[in-house]
Image (tube, helix red, strand yellow):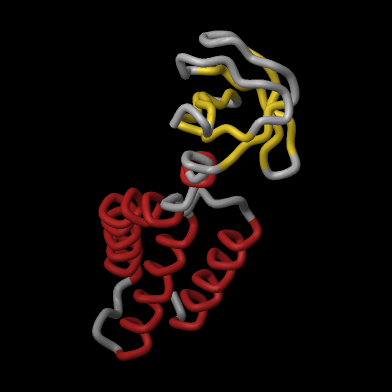
Length: 146
């Protein structure tokens, strides 16, 4: 195949990767096509069968070796980090919450379901410290009891 066909194929596959949401499949085939295009341009390989074999081998090897680390790196700052950053912040209790019971608390402009994990009740309007986040629930403890 002519070298610039490989380059066009590589650019098309890279464009498809950019147009699709974060799976990181096509980029490795784009790299394989671009690499074969450069090798073909340099005159190292002349046979179409060798070019296709090289394209397949490079693409699949790079997919197997680099996809998982790339996905891990891209997902490093996920939702869990943002929710875990709530621990230690102050929430304002919207209604009185006895020890071990659930109620509502305001934090960062949102109303949350909160569970009083402290030994003393938390009064309405009182500030309380977030000690844990469990899904969409906050575990809180009274500031005066801490």
